Image 1 (cartoon, one colour):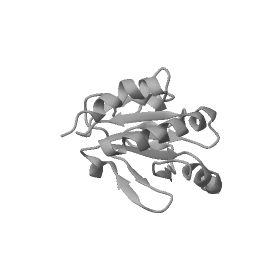
Image 2 (image 1 turned 135 degrees about the horizontal axis):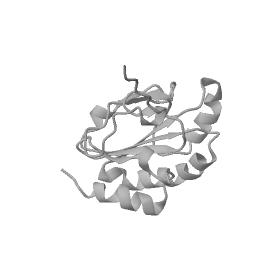
Image 3 (image 1 turned 135 degrees about the vertical axis):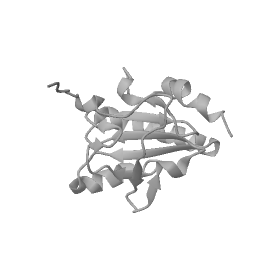
Image 4 (image 1 turned 90 degrees about the vertical axis):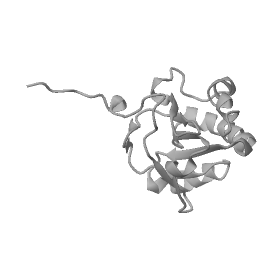
Length: 159
C-alpha cells in the first residue's frame, strides 16, 4: 500500500499557464468579488496580515501600483489572515489601501493550498490563467522591479 505525504504549501492546483483556481473575496464592507467575474482584467491576489512586517512594508507600494494601473485593467484583491477580533487593525490598514480587502477566515484555500508564509501573492492574466505562482517566488515581497517584470507586461495586453 502506498501513502502520499503532501506538504501543506504544495497541496494546491497551481500550474503557471493553466486556469487559476476559483476564489472569491468578501470585502470588509460585505461586497462579494469572484475571480470568475474579473475575466479581462489582470488580477493580483495578495495574502497578508497586520502582524506581518514584510506585508506592511509592501502594501503601500502595491496600493500605489494598483491605483496607477487600474485604468489598464489591474485589480488587486487583499486577503487578510488576521482573526476577526483584529478587525479594527485590519480596517485601519485597509483604509490606507486602494484595493479591496477582506478577512480570509481559513488559511486553507482550495486550489491555493494552506497559506503558511506571508506575504504571498498570485498573478492572473486577462484570460484567467496563472502567470506567477507566489509559492515559487524566492523573494515573495513585491518591489517596483518585480511588479515591472511580472505585472506591467500583462497590462499592455488588452483584448
